[in-house]
Image 1 (cartoon, rainbow, N blue to C red):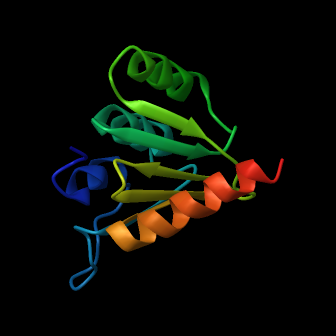
Image 2: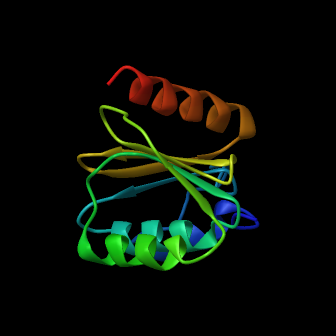
Length: 124
């Protein structure tokens, strides 16, 4: 199962969420002040069922995380998403942006992102 909630990702943020921020189901991390690669590595390693990857922008630490995951029973599907997107266990959506990442936890958002990534793969 993916992370119990997204609270664990706040350890990689240089600042804590403001009161009222939906911190258990949404986290945005910014480069260079936040540890974006460390957060992505934790997210990848939390996958127990599936990863749907729609990006090719990975650093060395993320590539190592993917290699370790590929040695498990986690199903990895690759597709295409122009700005970069990843879906973890059909629950967590990671949008990769030039300035960082935004992570949202919602199964319907994950379903839509997965469908988009895989549909774009079919168009290639």
